[in-house]
Image (cartoon, rainbow, N blue to C red):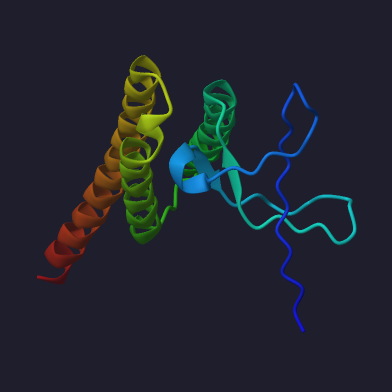
Length: 152
């Protein structure tokens, strides 16, 4: 038999009693944490953060990690001479998907100025990948032309 207990960690400051909250009415940011706790028997499947300042901090940290990951990949690509165009297209699609995620999900919780700055950064990253994709195609086409000319 599976034990499905649900825990609610919330206290009322005046009476120091636990308070039951209705998640449907609150409208906070919901996410699945990485269950890396040291407590035996505690497994967190879903977390709802309600406080706007904390939601903003969590999302900014999450977005910063993802942008750093993309930036490291792009720097690796620019240093490497032999890059596969299919990998570049996959990353370009992933960046576009992430841009839509920011617009659809995170825009509700973040400032408009910060979201515009993020979108500009993402556009810059996608522009760099597009430029690398264009420059990897041009030398291949020149090599094919040279091979055709030699064969005639």
